[in-house]
Length: 468
Image 1 (cartoon, rainbow, N blue to C red):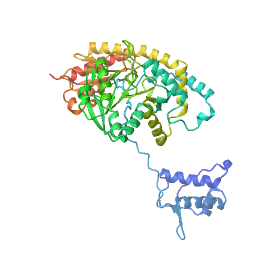
Image 2 (cartoon, rainbow, N blue to C red):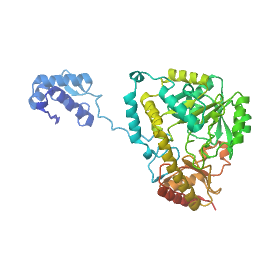
Image 3 (tube, rainbow, N blue to C red):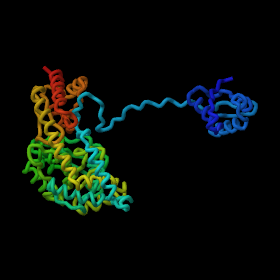
């Protein structure tokens, strides 16, 4: 007879349940296979020194669950459908935008210094918020966001970014991506079938924007920012720009282009969507004020704490003209009922207490030192490379020598333990064919010493990858 291995803990009681669990474990492990004949209830009861009724109850339970089958004249057997659990498949790693593969030196762009997240101060802000949080604030939130946060954000944006806004014009979102997706869908509903975007631009945003149903047109960027004359030649009446620190080239929209872009919006009855993604981090001078402050009826200002604190917070905002603010609020009501309340109150407290400003001042000092270290090391160790853009943000645009193969440089760097991102996917196909090879390097997460070492490794990869 099959050795059933059914240990019982008599002191624990529920013997029938223990027997049933033992059979299930035997089937799942593959020890008891389909068709195996089991002892009669009388024989098993004798072997286990329990009453027959205990075994009958276990057999009935397992039969009802499909583990056993009982036929007159054939006894009780493991059911044909019973089989061992398949070992859990090892899933292939999904391709997640922004996901990080562990490497020795990670210079891929997109994240701030996550180790610098102010855990203690954020926890203090959460505790302070919870102590004062009204009971009714725990109900479904205002789809536009908690008034306390919208009030703090309006004051902050006016003070730091020279925005012209008020709490009624601010809508809290789950990051810039959420705001951008919602706004584009509203524009599509208004008949905007085309959205102009910069060339080059963030490749991460393009699939999300295309999913809204708009057609994207690429508008060239040069050393003064977006080419407004080229924008005017398109049929777009809405444009997405990064004027304070263009992504990825790092240039700032020139005063002349700023004036022309506002004039274009007024003449075309258009809308400018201003992604202010890292405007707090300007190192050589005070940051240029936002476009929204010039014409708040024609410009939507988008921002978040993703670069200032951490992307995981998932808090952003849109400062929009009043009619659009009302529509965006209704869109939130009809799609997701708004942003979680507790993080909003925590951020409001962090802003109110001055903790956010202090954190930004500390990070500006840190990031400036890291940018300078990496830029200087690239000039020393990467022959023929050129660092583009102003002293700002948390990434560098590094143009490589013309004879380099961008993909080969990336592959050689990877084999040396250095992760870098190429610029070619950020350009439109037509311009990518003529753009010099380049890399977009994020430096926020590494100290100066490691950045210098990374530049040395990059120099070796560039020399190895150069042709001729």
